Length: 404
Image (cartoon, rainbow, N blue to C red; front, side):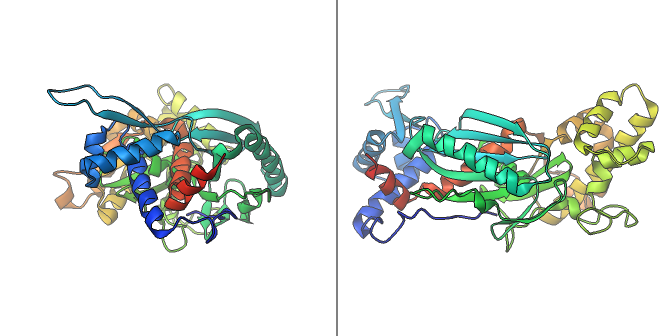
């Protein structure tokens, strides 16, 4: 799912010694817990991590001095000494997220508490990946100049298949085997560069910070151009042996007479998105299937042909979701992209496909289908989560502490 280009500082000389490493690891554990549960009290953190009160105080003091956490007095519920409520410090490390979409891109800076603090957008034609990478490299250099040592990693989001650290296929962009790691500008110290599929990263965010945060095994599905998604187990994506897992839209749930741009036939993608809506209406294949789908769903109330086309896609979507529930056994399904709107328009059609597709033993208590709570920025927030996973290590905190 990701490619990690280590900082040149991450050498044997820069790694903390064993005893110090253990203390930094405890600090990492506390910081990650605070990021997962903002506002957790110091006492609750100590109990969760099985730390003594003195150790918890020592670690939180250290993190506070390094501008990694903030501590305020928590509301008291009875007698006894007040304890501190902990939150990630927004003045701590940041990561840059590059979100490459069908016809535009976004560069976002995300701080330690998961807030998007700055965004920059631009357009691209999609026919010159090398030119776009050069442009993004320049823009990232400006971000790095603005944030200095606080910028600790770059995380790339792309609507395509990522395998072994490369974008191997992006059908909507017609890109094949593109090395997005070329965004590295070679400046010292080099920043880790990570990358992932947009649906996978959105699923990570929903599992940790969104509608699926209370689930253990969550299935995330999104409709954009085709269907993407990921299975998340305890906050970790099941990305497969090479990182290319989650290509649910290319399961053969559709008409095998239809060829998909991916090279396969009968893909679920072609039964659900704007291409399917156009085909059912007798229209030509749209240049921008997502925009076509948005327009079709807007017109679905007044135009019988469009209503029938969109309803048919809703049924096909529900049926495919059922197949994935049968295979993967999630306790929650979270819907992103255009899927919540499709379900809201035709809840009966989605339910018909879903209920009839479930194995009998699942029908009494199927997993709930929940709409995204993070919306369009879910993939950006997920990319930031993955980046912070990479840098919030014992070595990473030791390097942060060594900065002037």
